[in-house]
Length: 318
Length: 259
Image (cartoon, rainbow over all chains, first blue to last red; front, side):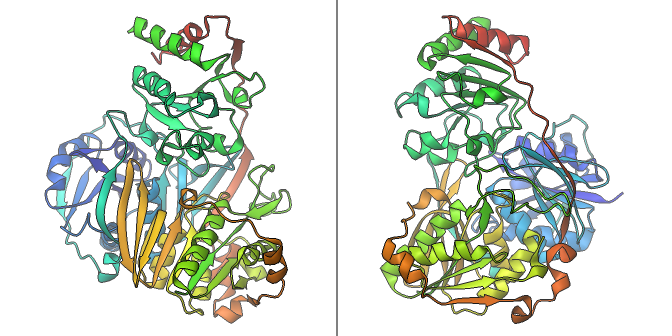
């Protein structure tokens, strides 16, 4: 059976949740094979978790150059594995880096790629949710090796383990892949909260929150639920919350188990980033707000009364 | 510094957007056509670089005849001249072959920097900066939220999930921008009048030396098999807050086994 390459995203010595989801998705098409592209020593820390997550093979592509340049060295690794292993497909998490890697790899290998897929069948047909979630599309790649950038939370990770056989890959980072050098990495806001795109719970605040200071209420609710904090375009444009937390068309797309929209009207630009959430709960003072059309449960009222009570009730149920 | 800026005409997000039932491509007739938002920020970034470092800005756009409206807007904002890639055989092109046509057109121009939006609001593929980097053989500074040029070195802040990276490269290079980077200017009356006199060249596939069957629906590296309207989400219960709104949400979440 042909292998399916899964590019591993990792942080702090553990694979990201999205990677474990991809290993599960890979089994739909073939034998999951994890690709670790990182600085020397990266794979050793990840191997057990990747095997437990279903990786039959773990390709170890380590080089001191790997983390110093924007994505292109990882494209070098994947392109050489496509050449040597003839995989059935390549799966990459659909973040900013993942989409760039997928696009580059497609050009490099004469392949097609599909971005932001939410489902995949054994025939290689992928499902995408487009136009703000209003249209569902089924597509397939018809050139080269199919490359899929998969939306986090679209698949569930399973506990079906793989052999996790380690195989070292010779890494040749081409000069053209050393063009965009990363000279510094700055973490602006992180805390202990989960990453927005992979969180099971996302609590987002919008115009109704009213100020940067009052976003602490949104953070408190997110913390009570163990979730990430999102914000609408109105809130990030106003400077109340950082741009990287923006959910919607020009921000990130999330698909959590629970999306809690607080003081967000639900304009199409926002819906484009959260419509595929499993459960949606909304709090807004305007009964006519379009967000209520999507909500599985909604409360029309003052968020400054409803949210503190909700936090207290969550505490009681712990 | 000579700059090429890419713009795309897209169906307005506020319109009712859909695909065509005959060939599963974007239904351009069904919705109002506008300039892709991130591309307007790209035009602004290009104009700002020109104002700081001199040179010329050329807008390149691919699309049907109507795309000229979008090109005129960029010219009205202050772009110097325009290239319109227009050929019926391009209809239905995938992102990968679109990047080939754009790269061929860019290759006819002398450039130091190519600027594009990080993604278009219709397809949201979000990979054009990287794909052009591959095709042109130059570095890409992607997801830029700020740009500083110093001689031939260009440095950006690249937006990441939890902050930013400082990334630098030497010209020639590609930059993709996010909307946080600037506030696009509005075309002035003078700009709109001047735009009518600016040079707009139209290039066909033959002009670019591209085989017609390598692009469009015929040459697409992926195909839409079918599409459907997403089933509406079941409208849930919406209640007025009678003083127990927070408790009722907690009750709902508990019943759904979320807490």
